[in-house]
Image 1 (cartoon, rainbow over the protein chains, first blue to last red):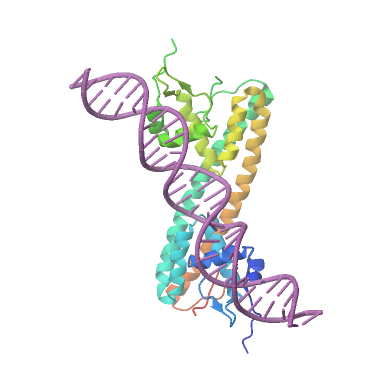
Image 2: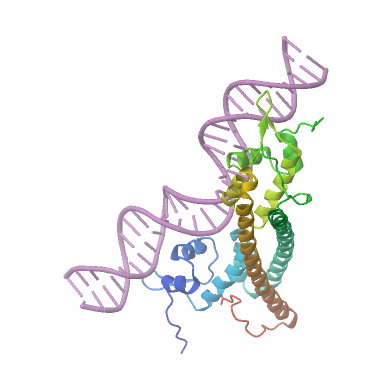
Length: 140
Length: 140
DNA sequence: TCTTGATCTAGAGTTTACTCAAGGATGGAT
DNA sequence: ATCCATCCTTGAGTAAACTCTAGATCAAGA
């Protein structure tokens, strides 16, 4: 009754946008739970693995290192008794990400101030009033 | 009349939070315009270099590579005739940063959905309805 | 003058996250 | 029976951004 179309590494690669190299490397890093093999030794994936890799991508994009994703993946493999730990890990991650985002937004604001500074200088032809910490340097 | 307190690499290191190694390495990468030497061959910095490194840090925090900062620093060294190019470079950077921020915010949102999912599961004791692309995986 | 701490250069080493290469097995199509 | 694409493993290579080491020089204080 349960008959998923077989998903080999090439198919998962296409579906996920990761190279087959990367998928195998993720596996060596403990980031690919639940991979089976067929009679010929080939890795067989389920449709869920596509979603899993997508989730991994979100973690990565929010700045999680492979080392911490390893911890998360290990918890997933321990089953539902690890739910509290997974929740804690993700919450801690969320806190860090929010802090990082705030810092990056602040940095962007400063860069934009510099843009305004250059813009004014260029359109008025004269150097605007000093803006602190915008990294001016005399020519030498 | 113009008498700045001498700033050697150790002082700049303290003031900027970068190691002396990093400051020297930045120089080899063309990221330190306007560094002079004293009679004994030691690097002498001006107070402006502190602001410069702070600005570099903002660029870095917003994800600019050292390679692109090189380009920016080279423009700075060309003097005011490079103003339009500097402005263009920073504006292009701003555009990229905003796009990156949007993607990261979206990723964070998905991670937060997963947190909610785990939270509900944990507090109700039963697995909530599927949320698409949250990377579930069967144990095996 | 001697010592100590900061500085210098050149070059090697580290970390993270892939990315590729070599050589070999497998399996469906002709 | 033979091709060819796709898969396998092991291990080496790459890129970015530092980070450290070794051996030498310099400057200021005891």
